Amino acid sequence: MTFNGFQQKDFETFQIDGLDERMEAIQERIQPKFRSIYEEIAADLNVLAGREMYLHIAKHARRTVNPPNDTWSAYCHNKRGYKKHPHFQVGLWDDNLFIWLAFIYELPHKSEIAAKFISEINDIKETVPENYHISLDHMKNEATPLSQIDLEKGLERFKKVKKAEFLIGRRFDAKDPLLWDGDKLIQTIKETFQTLAPLYRSSMDL
Image 1 (cartoon, rainbow, N blue to C red):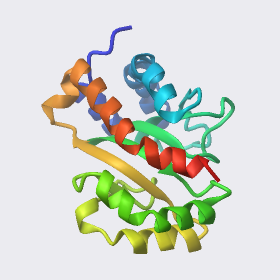
Image 2: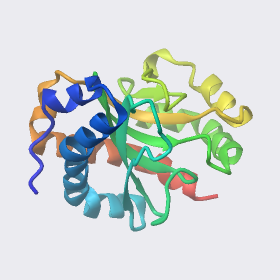
Image 3: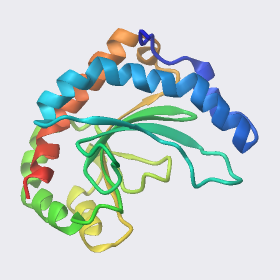
Image 4: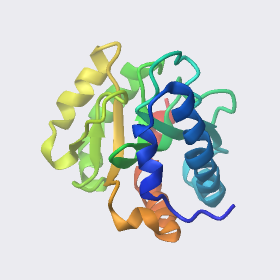
């Protein structure tokens, strides 16, 4: 399947009432696009990461009543799961698309990674553009531009608070024409991962 970008209908998926109904739409509209994106970027990402990266697509299996407000694909070196490892994400909320390098609360070596990032904070600020975003909770549709956040404070929280998280990357408004152009979006995802790859490799080098 050729990736032709996302359309408004994809984002409207999150307005559908009912768990089963929304999940069916996610599976039919969005998940095939996640697979197509992976086919386009996998070779480049493997080189950037320095290891083979496997596709994981959110199943939302724990949900029994409330339908998901977002959905995502993850790319991780571990074939069996991604939540306990540093990983890349591409996903959607109803009003934006996100491209993250993600370190979520299930990661067992959070404090060590945070300490390393704090020691490398000047390098991060020099290599990651100011218009990239930081999220401290993947469950919330909230993120702050790198230029407006106290990065060291966020990393200290990530280090010390058990449920704290650290995600860094880009967000695009659902109405951004870039998202409608498959080739341009693929190139943007590749460029974003290229920018974040040194951070990923640093987090894996412990």
